[in-house]
Length: 452
Ligand SMILES: [Fe+2]
Image 1 (cartoon, rainbow, N blue to C red):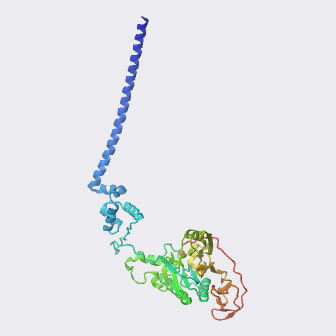
Image 2 (cartoon, rainbow, N blue to C red):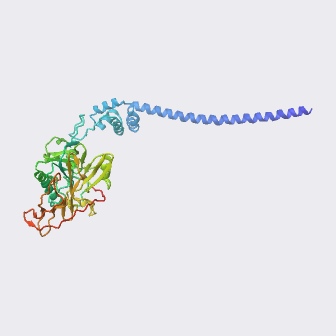
Image 3 (spheres, helix red, strand yellow):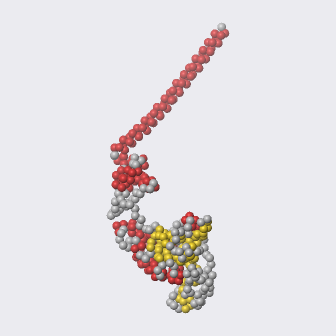
């Protein structure tokens, strides 16, 4: 009897458990079903959207044009590199024409072109301005990249950043350059960039109503000064590197009147035929002369460190040499200063801020192919010094400019450095009093960066 009662009670409990479980299963199925239907709906929406997009892309209506621009990168992937290059050439090298031809967004065309060119391909852009040519052609280098010279024994005078303007008085450094060239007779003379200023064709706005010289007036001044250096050189090899200011002359014409490309006089070099032009000059397969590279107060240090060679630059208007020695030997990072006067009007853009510049130039001397420590002609006060001598003195209000007449021997085999000219004569030939001997201090500019 007792067992029957217990069995009946157990059956009741099991049935209740089964009923509860069945209820839970029913609720779970209902929830999952709802979730499944929601997911299924979303998938249908996505698939349907893709179908609409693909249909629209193949249909070619205005909406397609919009989608192609949005999905330009994806559409581009349909082209192999060779197909892309072929399309580029058919478009005459014009991204705009190619975009119209293929429906690829211009931005995607530029990106794809960049990737191909990184892989070694060349896809030059042809300007689509009126009168311009859309015919594809291989790139042509307009400027000599590097010019090699040999200088086994002898001197090289290197100056930079003259920024010559018409009507500006000859600077002390400039007069000293002519004097030193006539005296030491360098075998190589390098104008290391920015002989031309190009103030009126600068990308910078003028300083208010500042009266800037015309290109023509500047050019005539540059030609006259370079001719004077040439006349003083007595057969030296004459080279010049391209400065960023020099490039203004060519760039303005190339961008404004491209149809005049091959006409005489359209490039600065056309006006200076005696001076070989290049981006850089390599002396004896080692030293590099170029207008600019690294900027900032550590510019010359970075130049000599990273080039692995002696390197001569301008642009920063400082006048210094930073030696660097490693397992390869000793070399120099040289800044050739400026031949200009920082107080002149060319540099009014600096708003009368102090300029950590050095007026002068550098002389490199090679003996048996070995570069000796660089020498500077430097302007200190109203005088220019070279090898311990006054080589030019700025004109004072009550007297004309004066230049020393003591012969300065070329360094190889010369004895300059221990003599003081006994009598100095002015440029007008008049005798002047013997000057007190001045010890040239070793000055190294601490830094500074040029504004333009
Ligand atoms: Fe420069």
